Image (cartoon, rainbow, N blue to C red; front, side):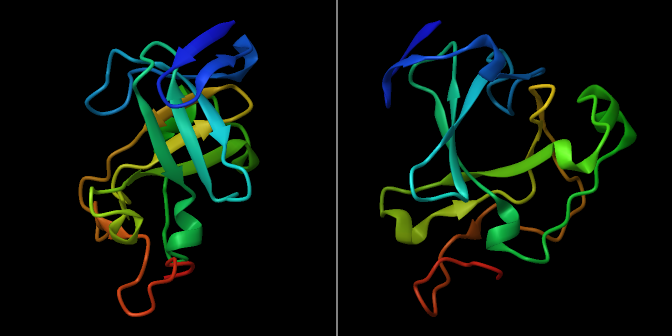
Length: 151
């Protein structure tokens, strides 16, 4: 199927590439179908493009590359809902926010990760109620102006 997007133009998407988030992401509960897109030469980042809303795309990052001590524990409910059988089926990403001041001030939300069973093409955003992580964790450290790899 061909989908139209504001950021990427027209994309040819196979049904097998669509990840279903049911319910949708926080604030976008009615939008449940997305595709996960690689970013050339930046393997730790992805785009999550809505199938049904051309203007909606989220920049994602693998949180384990940004903060090595990051940990996600999935409840039995999430494991069952996403039909996870093996840990290797799970992808974890966090949503990146890039402010008007530019990427040097970009942050990621470590409290609301996206959990994706890539094999079953099912996803869910989970929210940690009591968590020491930040909803605005900087991607670039202030000291070195380098990506927070392993921070």
